[in-house]
Length: 257
Image 1 (cartoon, rainbow, N blue to C red):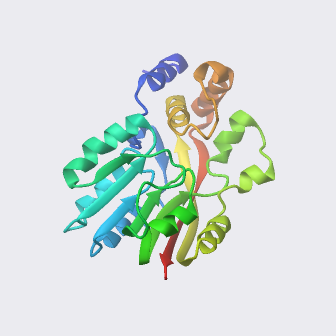
Image 2: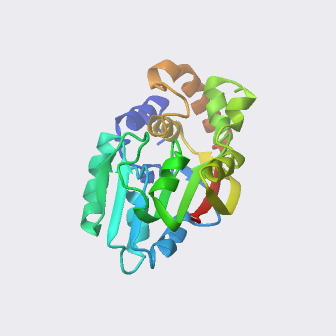
Image 3: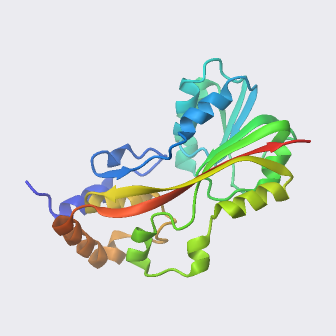
């Protein structure tokens, strides 16, 4: 039986959006993954290092997944997170693996000493404080990060917010990340960028996504956007999945001195 607009929206409003696990979207939305495989790369980088810091770990899912296939674990492992529900979730997930989770406001300074870590990582950081990354890296240490690039999922953003100015569309450009890394004294050793197809198969998937990724449509609520949501539901029912494109880039940088 076809589920109604109200049924789909009510279900998506009721589920938890804690953590950074998107498995609720299985069968309801699809996202093409970057070709480089960040979690696999992270697992490879973890081999042979003795200290690692994961900045803005979310619920700890990505680091935990990488640690599961990394073999012998680094003796010093730490992660930071600012949102209390995620701090609790990451603590439950990462403590059994030997990683300490530190509640941190995602503002300088990082709560660690100079040169504390051989490897600093971050997946989809909201803000990157390059000087702090350089400070906590030991000489010869590496920063590895997968980040959201410019105009990511903007087909959906602009459906609700209308056309965005060029400076908004260009935000989070890989060139700016390179400039930030180099400005902090790091040497960029790898940079890759891809745009990837994303499909939303029902309006519940859209509601869940916008509730979870809160910066896409700031202040999003079903009540404030019900008319546009209903129009989009009818469009998906008539034409098939709503298609958008995510932007992702990988950056790796080394501290040389």
